[in-house]
Length: 114
Length: 108
Image 1 (cartoon, chains in turn orange, red):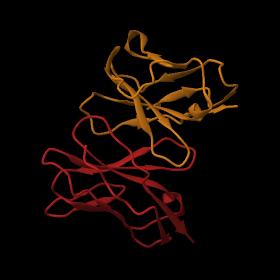
Image 2: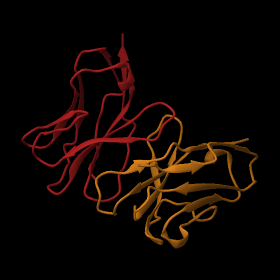
Image 3: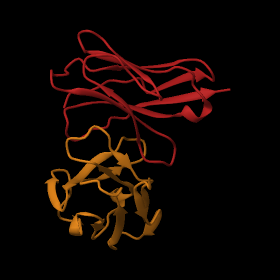
């Protein structure tokens, strides 16, 4: 079974630039999550999708972050414009359903904002 | 979701059992205890979860106290590959809130 795929693995940008991350969840998984993990901390949920609808985006900084999940499969997370404090690892995870105890995580994208 | 308290770091000798504690004194009746781990430069990995009863799978055992206010994750025979950050999370069937976890270092 293929795992959660993410790209790129690494990205370096200057502040005020924009960046986008891509995630392909495990086939058949209806629920998709984006997390932000700052160095030394645990992952923090940014947004949760159920199919192509948003379930929870309460911690997404909506003035600069946006996410979409077209056709309920792949998802993109965008930051525009980036700030220095956005430097983090962005993790994508998926699960069979929203009421599922096991989330499967991708390897993450490490973003450095200079 | 209830808050959890874990020691920031622990050491374990290879081949010995690793016992990772977690306090969750404010856990409510419908909340589960989940354990995930994160190996360096990888995404978190699900280990085990439980509600009231002790649980065991191929990776670990989960011991939950009778009052459910604390739990212990047991890796029966730790290997070097078990070196990771271990997260104890208390939640219903909903979003997971990760703390800082316990950094377990397994040494030869």
